[in-house]
Amino acid sequence: MLKILGSVLILTASVGGCLTFLERFREEERQLLAMKEMLIIFEKQLEYVRLPIAEAVTDMAKKAGAPFEAPLMEFTEKILYHQTEEVERLWRECFEAHRPSFFLNREEFAILLDMGRLLEPVDSKSQIASVEMYINRVEEKIQKMWEERGNKQKVYQSVCLFGGLLLIIVLL
Image (tube, rainbow, N blue to C red; front, side):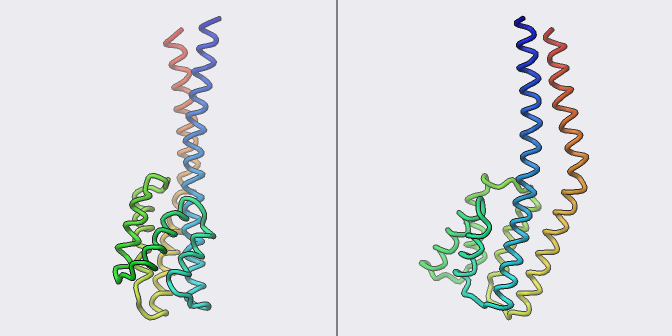
């Protein structure tokens, strides 16, 4: 009876581990899509509304939600109260301080950090072209993730399930 109960617990833990990996993929996808949405919002604000940086970033923060909201609001606060010229450096500092709350891989997070360059004062046509370039980069990452997702899901499901079964067999 005890062996059966232990086997059920091990199998449950391996399925739980698999679900954790799959949830991580979903969260990474959600964050990439939120980055794309933030860029589109920023592009439209540049093109049509022409809001000041602080207001534009606050608007992006409200629409992007967690985990983007905290670093964006911190960035806005620093811009408003410190009146600094080093916008890109502040952007990087705010997002690097909140790195643990993101599920993005190193390349994706580097794109997020580089997005601070968009806030540097240049002419609006150059800014819009840069925003479109970043949107394309994020879309490429999303496409790559979708292509790899099916294979990775199968691998994680197989490894978790067979790992749990192997552990059960060894312990029995």
